[in-house]
Amino acid sequence: MQAQWIIERKRDGEVLTDDEIGAFVAAYVQGGVPDYQMSAFAMAVFFRGMTAAETAALTRAMRDSGTVLERHGSAPRIDKHSTGGVGDKVSLVLAPLAAACGLTVPMIAGRGLGLTGGTIDKLDAIPGFRTGLEPDEINAALDACGCAIASQGKSLAPADRRFYPLRDVTGTAVSVPLIVASILSKKLAENLDGLVLNVMCGRGALMQTTHEARDLARALLDTARTLGLRAVAVLGDMNRPLGAAVGNALEVEEAIAVLRGAGPAIVREAVLSLGVEMLRLSRLAPGAREARSRLELALDGGAALDRFRAMLRAQGGDERIVDDSARLPRARFVTPFKAAAAGVVRNVDADSVARACMELGAGRSRMDEAIDPAVGLSAIVPVGTLVELGEALAFVHANDETRRAAAELHLLKAFDVGELATPPGPFVLERLT
Image (tube, rainbow, N blue to C red; front, side):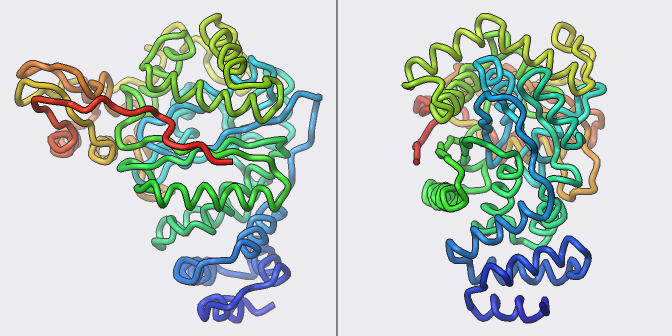
């Protein structure tokens, strides 16, 4: 197999065979294809695209580049994947909630790049919590509490682990075939019975229009079906931040509030909507109404919070954070960002909020860049709130005054305060099967 020939054929719009794609990916993992050639391949795919068969072959090859988790027990193994969004802490609530309802949830998650937050980064804010688990450690955590949230490590889909950062720095992150292969190769390595795909759509998402999000969702569903995985896709609104907190430790604190039956209504609604899909895929609940009832009981009755504590113990985290949020990282400065005029909050722009948090150090633009787990925004006022002149629209958590000032320049664009506000729509925009 000559890597150059594969790149040239895709550059010229030809259709690659399963064997060619499989050999190319295998050579990449083994060091026979350098990063610069993989980058060239990514750019060729970006411009020329892939057929459904090519996308499935790439996904399969990336899954087969590593091991697949063994199955323990008889509980349905269902996971959820989100394409990422601003303030998206849903996984931290949903994994233990689904486990409390009888599912096994082996969630392989990622770190954030660009404007979207990463679940692993949020969990890294918890003292002692280990996300770099080997497959046997993931299974041990699943045996202990029914859920685990971990990074993919060296064993699961290692081709994706190497390829993922290249896509971001080469401008090919939005290529639909590459997104599909990246997401599904990891999820197929989990040995699932079903997968719920939360494709975010809007200003704070990778896919900014409903059309783009729908195309990605359909490509994910088609590839999952081709490879024998039952799946459903939910398009979620990401024009506004998901919740009142953006920033790693701050989002952990908000997730715990939701696990207590409190927290922002939009986060709770997102969790319940996606949880319903997980239970329906598992066939443990025959309909949406029964599924939602079971989820609400587990959330409000404390069973989900108990599973979260158990997950913390299983992965080495300090479970005292559940009752004492002061044990989470805290920023040196917490200052209000004040309204410049009285009126109704008409919009909170997710993109501007994300850029403000990036300035503070809550995100990264390169995979090797360190992030500050303590910084971010809290108490972000929801759309429709009536505010007075000088009232806080959010609180800025910063460890550096220069960065705080830079963040506030973005916040000036984030909040639209005026006379009338259109009520925010539901989290779920569409459901595709």
